[in-house]
Amino acid sequence: MQDKSESLSTGGGLSLTEVVHTLGGCIREFKRASIATPIIVTGEVVMEVAIPFVTAQLINTIQAGATLSEMLPYAGALVLMALASLAFGIGAGLTCSQASCGLAMNVRHDVFAAVQRFSFANIDQFSPSSLVTRLTTDVTNVQLAYMMVIRTAIRCPLLLVAGIVMAFIMAGPMALVFVIIVPLLGFGLFKVVRTVHPIFRAVFHKYDALNESVEENVTGMRDVKSYVRQDYEKEKFGRAAQDVCSDFTRAEKILALNTPMMNFAVYAVFVVIIQFGSYLIISSRGTLLNVGQFSALTTYGFMILMALMMVSMVFAMITMAQESAERICEVLRTEPTIENPENPVTEMKDGSVDFDNVTFKYSEKAEHRALAEIDLHIKSGETLGIMGGTGSAKTSLVNLISRLYDVSEGSVKVGGVDVRDYDLEFLRNNVAVVLQKNVLFSGTIKENLRWGNPDATYDELVEVCKLAQADEFIQGFPRKYDTYIEQGGTNVSGGQKQRLCIARALLKHPKVLILDDSTSAVDTKTDALIREGLATYLPDTTKIIIAQRTSSVEHADRILVLDNGHIAGLGTHAELMESCPIYRETYESQNRTSEDDLGEDSVVEGEESLETPDSARGAAAADVADPKGGEANGR
Image (cartoon, rainbow, N blue to C red; front, side, top):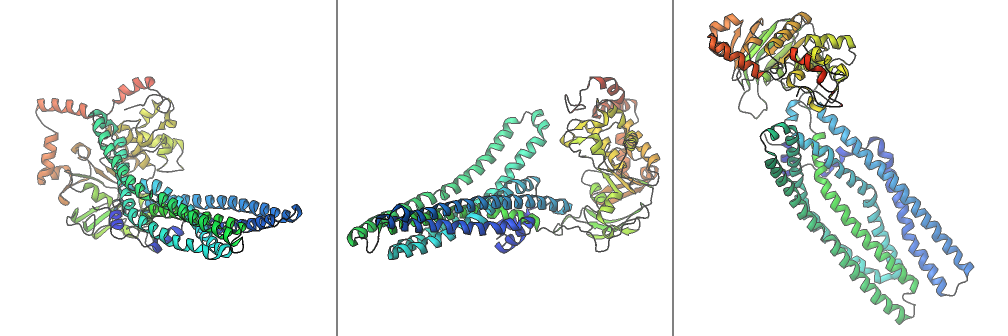
């Protein structure tokens, strides 16, 4: 699927108005600081422009032979203006930093909040590495650009215009040199910016690739080390880093032309000013241009050219930030494909699930249908097993129940109500899903379990963990339920992680419980105990169990067999053994009848178990260090 960000950025992107309007909404409580900064900067510019004018008057007074008492008012005025300029500068720095840092904070908050609202279809449009880049590098670029826009971008044009006006007031026609040089430098600046902008536009997509390489390597570190692929990964990362470096080098080389171009202009202008200014002072004996005016002219000239140089820096920063701003706005302006209805339903009478002629595609443009013409009716409290080969759309089917995706055709009903009519939060609190690739978050076991119910008591935590066969290994940890879980649950085994996630889901007391191959990493005995616990603890809850092992579903009330998005069979274990070749072949391949095959199966089954048996784990528990403070358990 083509990344939407690419189509936006390469196909014209958002207009400046759209970008400004979108990011402007993130200023919020920092509007006062954002408005105050240009006002304070204006005061600073007035003081800076006035100082050379007063200095010129002081020089002329000294040249005329003024006494100390006649010079003191000028000196006092200069001191006061310098202090005022300093105060304005400090004030502008404070308000500017407050506004820019506040904007960055709000942008990060809004982008993160937008991602939380995304449906799975929205998330499919952005890679995780791209979202990380937008929340970090892109936001930093926007923050720096905003800081320059509300301070430097206001200060420099004001200083430029005021400097030229004052130069004409003080030196008359000699100030024309600035009128000539400014357009020339402006044209050069425009050419530089126009050249580097496409380079910056491309480089941020390469940043995404760089972050993706890091994320992929860190996430799959065990596989990298197992297959001894460190050198390959370093080489791959090196290529991505070199690619980013090459593009930035190209852009920086072009931007570096600003400095020599500005320096040449500065020196050329001052050569003209000093040459002709000195000639006028000497030849006219100070009647056409005096020393004070000449001093002010050189000061204004330096002020004008430095303002131009700062303008070039502002344009360079804004050029770099423009693409970052568009990428951020792309996330903020993406509308979730799944939203609450206007008048959502917040009552669910039971856990019945009905698929009425359901067809589903992952995108409107997709030619392949993940599910086609699904008619399925599950009674409340029924246990339904789902089996099928890889790619048969088992997960796609259950994702529609909790409305992670919306159907393309037909309808899915829970408790007799279309899932599109429910309040999303209410629906997902009543339809609990435990995935095969479970995720635990950094924090204690208690904190992870309470994702299911923030108000759960300690006794409730222990109860659901016993049902999920997790309490035994938890009690083996030195800190028990206060054991710290590392990010992603890397300090517990796959089976332990699955059982903790099942316990977490049980705390929701859902009307529908979906186990998406979530016992694949536990042995068959533990799997049976979990199923037995679910039956007794949630007798009225509809249980949907996706599994690869027939032993996990053969005792279900009914079993659904999917094949390439179609229903290939539906019935009890005995009925499917008679009517469904796919199910029968799967069952027979997993349950050979010869003694030799049974012996082989027991060996294979032992090898496939991803964790230490409970009896052995209990004996070894005393030797396991606390995962937070010492060695990891269960790896």
